[in-house]
Amino acid sequence: MVTPVIPTDFPPHVLRQLRARQPQLWLNPSLAAAVTPSADLDSAPAQARMDRCASLLADVFPDLASSAGNVTSPLQPVPAFQQHASATPGRWFIKCDHALPVAGSVKARGGFHEVLAHAEALALAEGIIAPDDDRRALASPEARACFARHTVAVGSTGNLGLGIGMISAALGFKAVVHMSADAKEWKKARLRSRGITVVEHAGDYAQAVEAGRQLAERDNTIYFVDDERSLPLFLGYTAAAQELADQLADLNIPVDATHPLFVYIPCGVGGAPGGIAYGLKQHFGEHVHCFFAEPVAAPCMLVQLASGGDEPLSVYDIGLDNRTEADGLAVGLASPLVAPLMRQMLSGVFTIEDDALFRWAYRLKHTEDILVEPSAAAGFSGPDWLASPAAQPYLAAHGLTPHMAQATHVLWSTGGSLVPPEEHARFQARGQQLENAA
Ligand SMILES: *Cc1c(COP(=O)(O)O)cnc(C)c1O
Image (cartoon, rainbow, N blue to C red; front, side, top):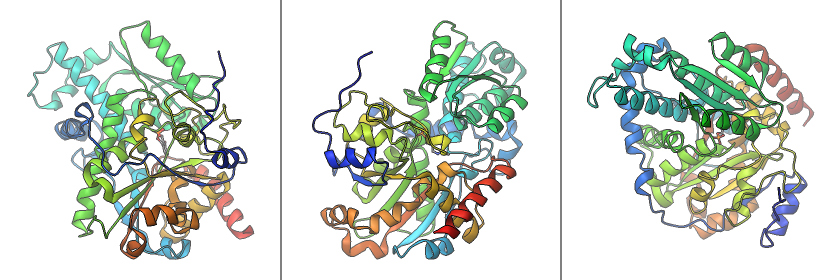
């Protein structure tokens, strides 16, 4: 294998800070005012699929009965957290995907959508359902017998495995999760307790994905959910945009030139934040400003986008090690599907040290009594970055400087509600210790 060469136009000061593992805000020079939605990347069919499968989900998951099978999360104002955190004006909200039912993370959105799409396709092909049938028929004994002859496999550091594993098993599929060395023990244990097969790999996330992909290629009863390349997964995430738009509208919060919307989303391989950002851009255009958050050891999207091209460039290639406590974000190479889509859409990326993740998670618990996992806290320094000198050129260029008091900041909280209490206690103790030392 040839070692990729760092492109000569990779901005030297960005590279220097990346290598020094110093948190930074990178502003995307390729951000375009208008984005052209592509016909095959429309979020409407994904939304329609989730809608027609809602009654099915309510039937197979007791946790979803109260929401009638809708996979949605609250948009929660966090005034105490905001006041404690910083002087950044505007209104802050947490988008509570850590509380998404069944999967306990943002992965419920993309993962459920892809497995449902696969189940529909199989059942249609086998004549078990007709196109217009009630999707509750996918829980019939006939459908289950069909699914039992098929396997759904996925490679994951943890949360995607939980999401895919849970829904696949609930529909009667055999489920196999290929996990990387950094996957947490409790996640493996939980999967196994649901009858899901866990295959452990010594390597990192990309190697676990590759192993799963290869096994599936040799066996046509295995359907592989490919986190690095999957369109159905990406499209499932885009549907979050309509949900957020509805929630803001319900609160009478405008999004326009004088009421900018800032969204901060933790980024691993890029599928979840990319899908959400894509959907939001379709909805709000230039009035939404999407920023991704990545650990200083694993800033794969920043590295790929700052490289200026589509030739894969990983965090290893620039000398970083991809070792972070944020297991959901421990990805060395950005999705080759998503990175090009973000090139003109993403406002920027900021990086964060692991210690800060624990401090933010502690502050959120302390002020609002919300528990999140460290990965999910990665975006919480977003409003501070926007108030910092580093962001002023961006605000000025977009005419936003006079309007920041009317800004809405959405901190996307991506996981945590399934984390065992003893793990949360450990996160909190570490955050408290760091906070007191500061
Ligand atoms: C997976 C995950 C993300 C990021 O999603 P990607 O699609 O990998 O970019 C963020 N936070 C948590 C908690 C996750 O599990």
